[in-house]
Length: 162
Image (cartoon, rainbow, N blue to C red; front, side, top):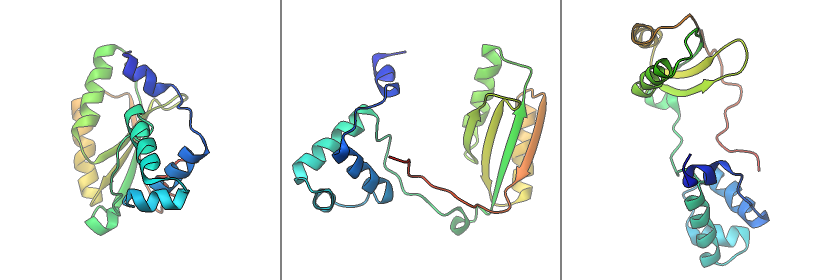
């Protein structure tokens, strides 16, 4: 692990002002630095310096727009639960390559417990999911695969609790 990677894994020391800035940026990162500074009660320069420090340290990973999947035609969310009996480095690299290849896979987690991996997929239709599913199982050997269709999103937040 490089020093940069190690630094990013070490929890950052955030004071109350950093937290105020982060809470607001998680709500709306499009605010001007002037507006953000006034909102949290510091000078524009102080706010800018804090944001830059948090960008450089990896606290702020990136600034993005959060899209509504339904508004862009991605109507279905599926979860794929995977069990494997393969844990060798080569298999892990192949599996990672497969999940990185498909933009429809929007999250992938390695788990502790009965399920080894949980993948979240956003697609336009069940037919599109079926095609993706066939491609995944054709490209990497899996022991057991179960998929589930999300019927309703009951909560979805991008903001982390501070």
